[in-house]
Length: 101
Ligand SMILES: [Zn+2]
Image (cartoon, rainbow, N blue to C red; front, side, top):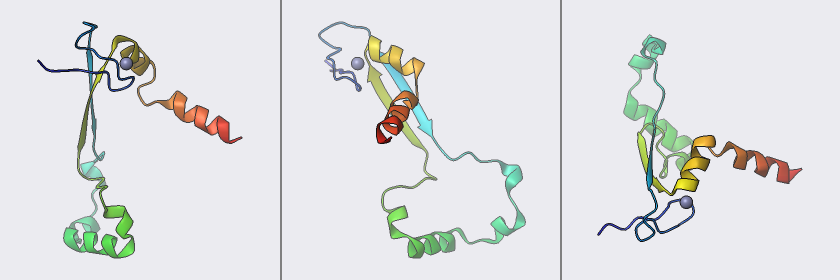
């Protein structure tokens, strides 16, 4: 039997029989083909990567902003409800800001 727990609060969703909600997210670069300029086409992509590597190795360690990232979360009913109200956790981000003051 597949075992599910809430990815936010850790509640066991398998034995409790509680309804499970799946959240899928994708993150990828927004790309507007009309923004392509002739200069961009002349660039050698590998050369650009090499330049980037020279400039700041930390940038390319395990973060590649051009690779689409997919996320999948299992949520319990109450975490699902919270997620729908604030999908990006902006309330949490805001409260961090307040604590600095
Ligand atoms: Zn939960």
